[in-house]
Length: 193
Image 1 (tube, rainbow, N blue to C red):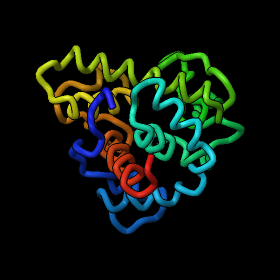
Image 2 (cartoon, one colour; image 1 turned 45 degrees about the vertical axis):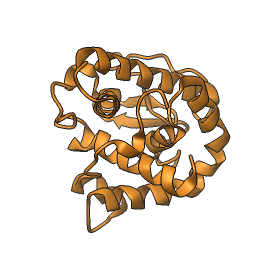
Image 3 (cartoon, rainbow, N blue to C red; image 1 turned 120 degrees about the horizontal axis):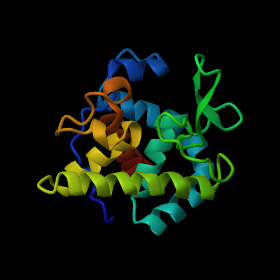
């Protein structure tokens, strides 16, 4: 794929905080793989859309599946397509399988399409590609795989959050790109995405 080989990206996997979603007694790559596997059955209904969007944006479909797994647990963590509820604001911050941020104080995107539609996946993947390109320009000396990992972290917290190769130091769970990469590697190796 045009943005790097997901199988070559180095990863430490999920943090203990993230692995607690599934009450796992361990963290790391093994935990990311377990969570990806837990979501695999639900992910199947989106396979055709994921593959189509991956081809359109020249992004590995396994990476799209991994973000869907991390962000919405393949739709299982959503309420009518919405997620990331803010009790302070009294509303949801993100939309769809890939959780496009609609909060005006963050991403400020306008949700496109139904929460599980190809239109939504195109919008979210377009945002991901944008951030990968920003990180490429910001860190031209990084390898393609390091730029890809930085772009994944930026998808979570914005490009200003990526200051050096420790790209997860302020991402959600302090493991966002590492967890997503490990899940993507599992989907690539075990489900042929």
